[in-house]
Amino acid sequence: MSDTRTLFVPDGLEGERVDAALARLFGVSRTRAADLAKAGDVQLNHQPAGKSDRVTAGDLLEVTLPTVDASPTLKVIAEPVPGMSIIHDDDDIVVVDKPVGVAAHASVGWTGPTVVGGLAAAGYRIATSGASERQGIVSRLDVGTSGLMVVAKSEYAYSRLKQAFRSRTVDKTYHALVQGLPDPVVGTIDAPIGRHPSYDYKFAVMESGKPSVTHYEVLEAFRAASLVDIHLETGRTHQIRVHFAALHHPCAGDLTYGADPKLAARLGLERQWLHAVGLGFEHPGTGEYVSFTSPYPEDLQRALDRL
Image (cartoon, rainbow, N blue to C red; front, side, top):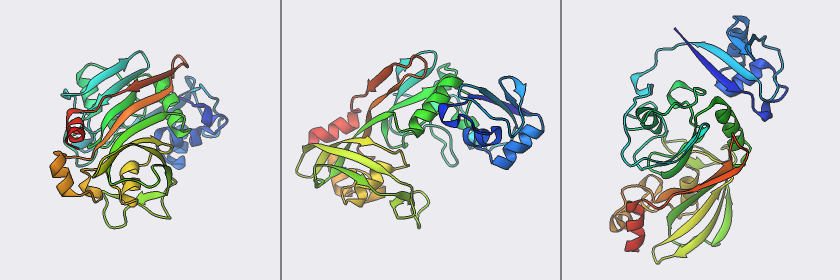
């Protein structure tokens, strides 16, 4: 059995060797990519490619990978996702409004619903690029975070969107309810983030981490918490949660990162108050700038009303 995957070469890989491009696009090692090319399992624009051949932006790369038996938890399970709305749909992309309690894709240890599975159940055909359980996914939201996500339907869209996220040209806007009042009320958090040294499921601000930049502005201050508008310059896992926790202003309800459980109970929160309210980017098919917005879910609006 084999798994053939295709992807258009993005502008950022112009002039790269085939093995280097494969390593970047398909997540394999340079050595593995070279072996695949030697075995005749790589094609460039429908022609056999050598490992040292050079690629041009827009070229079509095809690679045939041996199928590896995966854990059942990593297989896409097509099942409807209650509460997941389709905000936009065309030949290249689908924009979804992800509810809380839903993962972007399957992962080890996660047995709940996923965006990929929900789209499959609804009959959507999405890009085949990327790992088999996360095909079409170009960015993710935490299970406990709701809001907007874009999923690629075409291989070209996948390539272009991945490049846009890498180039930080995608406008991602979040609203968070954080404990206390950040000082200053408008600012930038520039602090590297890495995996927590003691807890595998957590992340932390640390010198050895990856560069991480968060811009914010307080929209409304309450006695116990503040509603904050946030724009991400980078997109690290748990970035907003970690950055505001490091400032001693964790997202309300985020018990993982030190939020006050009494406040969470008073507000009726069973997850972090964090929502992806806006998403804007250059459409990979038309080149036009498109933007989308998402209203607060009922649980987050209810918490605000209680304040």
